[in-house]
Structure formats: structure tokens, C-alpha cells
Image 1: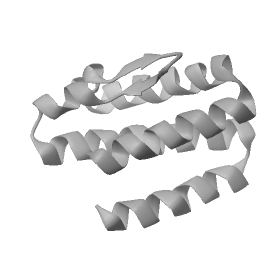
Image 2 (image 1 turned 180 degrees about the vertical axis):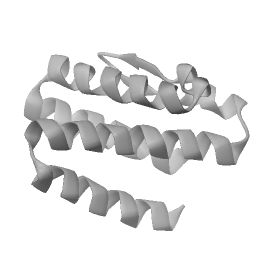
Image 3 (image 1 turned 30 degrees about the vertical axis):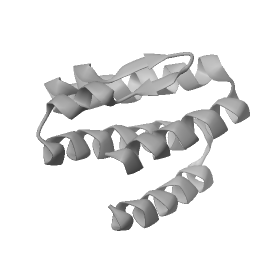
Length: 103
């Protein structure tokens, strides 16, 4: 889970600088909505202008928490891809694969 927490923190910071905090919050809210459609436990994910908080996912089975975190991150990438282009989404996906292989 620490890898997912760090990854979301990095994505939040870098993308917020590129597109602005309010646009990033919209992306996150959409990704969270999509994730909640798949996993009701995703309601444990909290969003604010300070960042994304996954700590409450620690209440879940570790594998389930990782599955939800992964789906949430991929939803962020998918939404960003639609907004800012496939190239950025491909870069983020490549980084995710590298980090996911480390988990």
C-alpha cells in the first residue's frame, strides 16, 4: 500500500502543477466515482485540496486495498488521458507498471 500512497502523492503534486488544483480535483472526483461504481469500499478514499488520503483503506484486507488503489489510479490515468492526451496517459501507465512490479 505504501507504493500506491506514494504514487498517488506524486501524481497529485505533478499533475496539479500542470493542470491546476481545481482541474485535478475534478479528475480525482471522477476517478473516485468510477472506482465506487466497482468497489463500494472506495468510499474510504478521501480527497481534498491537500491531496488524496488512502489511510482508511488499511481497514480492509491488504489485497483488496491494493486492488481498489490500483483501480483508482488507473481511473485517474484514464480520465487524464481523455483530458490531456494519450501521450501523458501512456507515460503514467508505464510508470505504474514499473511501480506495480515492485509491489
